[in-house]
Figure 1 (spheres, rainbow, N blue to C red):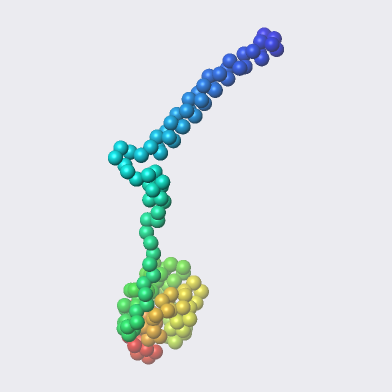
Figure 2: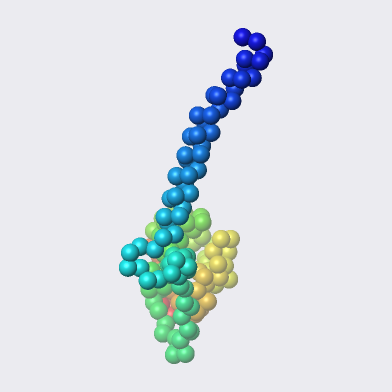
Length: 162
């Protein structure tokens, strides 16, 4: 086979590939067109369907702050509502509720220090556990509640209400 034979055979081998690519392109074009045809009985224009399809699935609304009087919660209630989010599972190095080994060095710092850390925030823990509406007494009660579950004997009345 000489050079002239090789040149003449190349286009004939490309023809089936061009035909296959053309068929795929035609099939894709038909599918794309069919996707834009409204279903029978559908009176909405295609554009309206597109807007409906891309609308958000949910909306977030921020609750208005209550103008009523603040109701003091017990330390246990604060722990369940706020503190347990991290302290129940030990998230972000938070000492787990009831874990004496993790709480011992903290308890040794003293009740006032723990309350100060909880009120002002420390390391990964935000001030007031991330809830600015908590009173000092509620923070003190929550600290006593968690520390006492790990062996402390703190009296929440010392710094605030239970």
